[in-house]
Image (cartoon, rainbow, N blue to C red):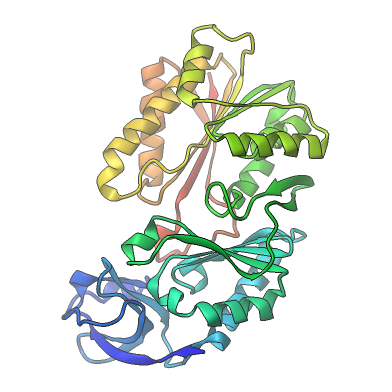
Length: 394
């Protein structure tokens, strides 16, 4: 199956610099005209001069009206997808050497706009986020089977971004049989993952390198892992010699999996369901016998769009202020934000303000980002979304 190019679009004069530098999005106000067409139509994009720039997905109903696929005149079909997926797999074999579970495809960063694929051992969890990729569903399944030969493919098409593309929200098996839980390994630890439930596609591969980085800092610490999800940070802490580990999440099913993961690895860690801010207030008020000197703050995205940035930054500041207040001198705070609307500068400013409000002085031990299987395109800052800091109270 292929999608034929049936439409030509033209950029307004003066709107080409970002695209010529390597960016792959065109917004609707950057086009001379926004012609009617089926969402996901494959179109040729021309410069104002008439020179062709490339081929991509067109959606007249989306703010991102055009997503560049290729700068060459070539068919967009299963062979095209297979080539891109094979290249993505080869890259992961380099940057996540030895791992059999990782993010295989990260949208525009892999030349596959609107596609996220996580590989959980022999199973794939897929999110289709653009109307164009939705129209290639059959070709995509064919290409994934040829490149990876999975036992099963599950579509996690429940992300709110689909609504912006005019797509329905749905979750279903697309190929084979996908079990309720899949066992994977990462960094020597075993995890049970639910491809059809939970946050994102079922596991936070984007924090893989940060989990490994923190291992030397956990030894003999009292670790409080907020928003622990299925326990990856907490279990790394327990394995690295933490004196005590307590994980908290608002999701009951996530906590149940975290407990199972602790048993699976034979590790001592306590997990409970609860609200992060309430627990931090309890710790700050000496209402808990456990006194953490290492706190992890990794909330879900609090900034879903640019208009929500001010409110989201205030929420991040409040949460980190509460964490700072709980930590003694020499204590460590590992904190993250996962929205591409939050810049590295905004992130650091927010932490600076949070420390000041808590009356604490802190030094930066590390500023890091997402794992390499979530590649960041130099010309496309939107592909960088995870910011991570390790701070020490002084």
